[in-house]
Length: 311
Ligand code: UDP
Ligand code: MG
Image (cartoon, rainbow, N blue to C red; front, side, top):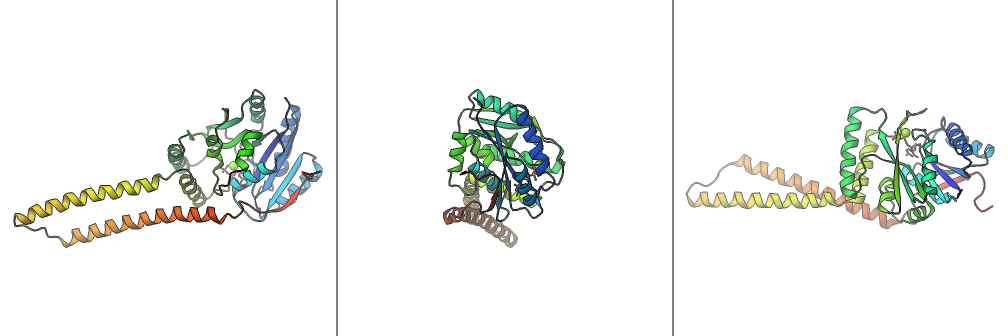
């Protein structure tokens, strides 16, 4: 079956990459005679991404664009693209061509064989600093534990069948972590591996601060382990205090009461910092609940371009 393929491409300040990505991905799909549409989601770019995108949509009949009112993040952009897609299956791919477009053909062939989710797995992580690689390793170890899926080589490059797309776009979660949700939903899944390419132009949008925020937010959205950890810590401290208390009591009966002002202060400082950290963690989860119940939209679309979906 030659079903329609929607390619979802999140783009944030990618003015140099829009035309290039549309041309490269388009020619790969045309070459293989696959019916397709390209859906670029401009995630509130501050450069000329949107202008370039509107131009590309005017010239190429396969291109559609969505423009966010501000930057809502890559996850929101992916969700918006999936919501706009009309294909029988969708591929999500980065705008900077770090995900090799030829691999889409492999994914599509697997979809034709009946797979409903095709995960793209990084066989190498491309060039990045040692510190970044180290932090990524830790993050993926934690997130794999939290989700129960092996996420060590996971990426956002994947193909989803219409059924899987419908499930994802109907999820009410605001803090959706796309990479893990596509495993969480199940379905008949397989994977292909790819090498992360060099970025063609522009630069990575991830600052260290953004990465830390991303890690904390995604771990907490899949796991309550931090809460269990502080409970365990509380139990350990309780046991230690009971033991110490017992020793002190025995010593008192033996006529040698414990002295030590410094010890008291240190224990006091230690336990109050544990309490503060614990309150912080609980507060963080409450804030997440608050975020969810406010029920604000995940993204706001300011404009669209390309052919009208209804026409
Ligand atoms: N991106 C986005 N919104 C953001 C940040 C990034 O839509 O807030 C897009 C970006 O345009 C690119 C993809 O997500 O298509 C991956 O971003 P980037 O290349 O900066 O990440 P890296 O490859 O360094 O992990
Ligand atoms: Mg990139």
